[in-house]
Length: 422
Image (cartoon, rainbow, N blue to C red; front, side, top):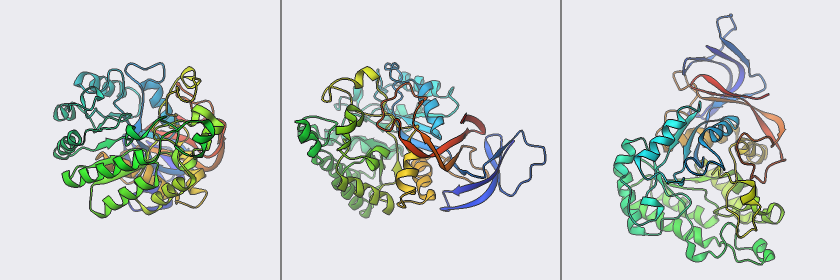
């Protein structure tokens, strides 16, 4: 048994926090209240300066395994997740080969079971991520797929997507969508705006995202599917989601820490480390995203953890791959950029980083209550640290070297300490 003493315990279901002790027994929370150290515990953790919250849940990570393990693999990705306070992650399907078959799916799931955290896997919507034919979604769900996505490539065939949403609705699993219409884009990864003009390129305008989100909100309206709009970045896209929610569409939206922290001007300072799809947009977009977090239009904070090698990111801006790592800075950016600045309470942040993402996938984690899963993160929200020494194989982050608040001290999964700060 583990006794965690004196922490600020976040109850995400009730939306409140209180000073309390937490007892873990096996893989469950045995109690929350006042407990004395009577010598019967295997371990006692002093959490007097810390928040004790449900383990974080990231519904959008790329562990690059199989096939691209020089960037990341399931073991190193899980280690980075644990260091960032995450106890559950959902791996995207754009590996090599892609996860469009049971064999590759089972490889990811089985390797994930050996990591110490919960590594779930999404399968692709279309065969080969080519957007031409649907995978056998029923068979893939039976084999363990948690949901479906062609993340990294937008689904341009509206009729195919309608069929996929109908299947997803019947299977009661989420379908997650990468929303960028390539017909509007000349140089992906950089917003079509002032920074792009200074660089002498056209970039990716917000209409590429807005138009596809609007279409897919309506397809979701007509199919009843549970749809997740991934890494939302634009004001227009946000308004489409807001309207869809008013219409009763079963839709959620996720935002990344880099999109609520940086603008397109960052590419002038950080180069390829600020290149991602969809791109960083304007300050007006950034402020709209924060407002969306405040009013509940955006339900989830997800990292879109996208590791690349140093050599790949050293390529010229228009040639380098898009994406950054995010698991080890996500919580701290949420605290530093949202909580410290008064946009969200700590409880609000934990709901968007644990309970809401768990609910999207029908998981029982993300809660702090007697009998709940013993998946926890213990962090000091006032303790500063420098973002460096990543557990990920990759270091492609504009936040490297930043001083952030919210140091993770312990990550506990299934009642076992899987990360402890030095």
